[in-house]
Length: 145
Image (cartoon, rainbow, N blue to C red; front, side, top):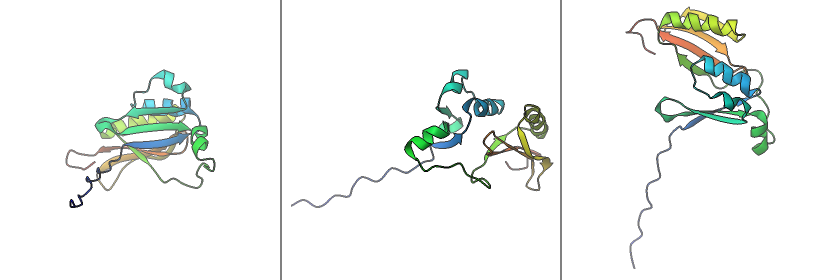
């Protein structure tokens, strides 16, 4: 009789994908292109789009009908948000410049740029589906990001 062996260790989970549910794919992708995401124009006609970010993390966009295809009870959230994305603009003046550019393009500005107590120039806009996107940059090389 042989001794029982321990099963192989389970792989360590890792965050691989952040998914956003969108109402209007072309409008949403246009917004994220303004933030520097490299998304081909042909993606505007897709129901599911993925972009690989630095470090291999993927950002996915699904139209509402795709989500309802596997979760028929899904409803768009109301009254607030549970996720926010953040974009490092590199330097404080770039926060203000991107803020002005986004507002000129019709993006909803939620909180105009300010110097935050935690050492960053900070602003918040909303993507076309109401997801907050923080724009930030360290105020000085010693300030954290």
